[in-house]
Image (cartoon, rainbow, N blue to C red):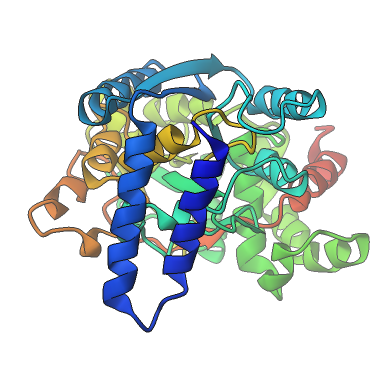
Amino acid sequence: MKLSLLSGIGACLCMASVMANEPASLEKNRAESWATVEATAKGQTVYFNAWGGSNATNQYIDWAAAEVKQRYDLTVKQVKVTDTAEIVKRIETEVAAGRKKDEGSVDLLWVNGENFKRLKQEQLLYGPWAEQLPNWKYVDLKKPVQVDFSEPTAGLESPWGTAQLTFIADSALTPQPPHSASELFTFAKNNPGQVTYPKPPDFHGTTFLKQLLLELAPDPSVLQKPVTLEVFNTVTQPLWAYLDQLHPYLWRQGKAFPASAEEMHRMLADKELKLSLTFNPNEAANLIANRQLPPTAYSFGFTKGTIGNVHFLAIPVNAHAKAGAMVFANFLLSPQAQARKADIKIWGDGSVLDVSKLPKALQPQFVPSALGSLTEKVPVLAEPHASWMSALEAEWLKRYGSH
C-alpha cells in the first residue's frame, strides 16, 4: 500500500470533517473516501499484535478475521504477545533503525494506558483516523472513548471494548448491598471479617483504592492531572483516614489481604466473604455459568459511578497495511462484531457503542440478560492520570504492607 495514496485519503477525510456547513457534501466525501480505503485494503495482510493469553479472545479474533476475509478480501494474522510493552519497544527499534514509513512489522496493536501515552509522545502512531471510521457514528461518547488514562486519544486510537469496576454479592446472603464508600464502611462494620479487597499492587486492589479516592477526594478533578507530592499529600488524606477506620472490620482485621480478585470469588462462593469485585461487568455471569458462583450471585455498582476505562486499537506510524488496519478496526466497531464480543458465551467484553444509536432491531442484542450480569445503569468514572497509580501503591505499601 502506497503511503502517498493513504496520505491523500487522510487529507480527503480531514477536508470532509471541516465542511460542517455542507452536510450533504460531507457525507458524500466521507463515503467516497472510505470506498477508497476499502479498495486499497483489498488483498492486504494485517499483522494484528494483541495479547494472546485468553482462548476466548483468540477465538473471537479468529472469527473476526474470517469475516473480513469474506467481506473485504482482507487477511488478518494475529501476532500473540504477552506484554504490550514488547510491541512498543519493537516499534521504537524499527523506527530508530530507519523503518519509518510503510516498512514496519506491526499494522495494528491492542493498547491503552501508559503504552499508548509513550507511543503518542514519541510520535510513533499514524493518524488521526479513528473518528473518521464509518462505524464511529455508533460510539457512546459518554464513555471515556476519547481519553486514555487522562491522555487525549486525538483520533489516534479506535475504542474496542470497555471495563468497569463491579462488585459481586450473593442475594441469599446480601439482599441490600452498599452503594457508596460510606455505605461500604457501615456494611463492613455490621459484617466484621466478611469484607476485604485484594492487596495492592494487585490490579484490582489498586483500582479499589482509586475508586475510594475518586469518591473521598475534596476535588477529584486534580486526579486527572499528573501527581505532585504536595497535591498527593492533601488529596489522599481522607482516603488514609477512611482506610484506618475500615481495616479493623475487614477480613483478618485488615492485617492480611487476598492476593487477587479470583481468590475473593472463591471466598465469596465459600460464604467466607459477602462481597467480591471484578473489572468485567459480565464476570459474575461467567462464574455462574461455570458453576463457580451460585445462581443467586449478582453484580452491582456504586450509585455515583465506578471507575472504568476503555481499551483501544492503534496503527503505528510505519505500518505497512494502514488501509487494511482501518478496515479491520472499523469492522470490530460494527454492531455485529460488538454484539458478538459482548456475548458472555463468546467473550463477555463490554461494548463501546451507544445502544440508542443502533437500529431498533439490533438493540436487544446489547441488553445484558445472562444471570448475574450487571443490569443496573452505573455511571463510568474516568481513570485518574496514570501517575497516580504507582504513587498510591507505594504509599499503601508503606502504611499497610508490612502486616
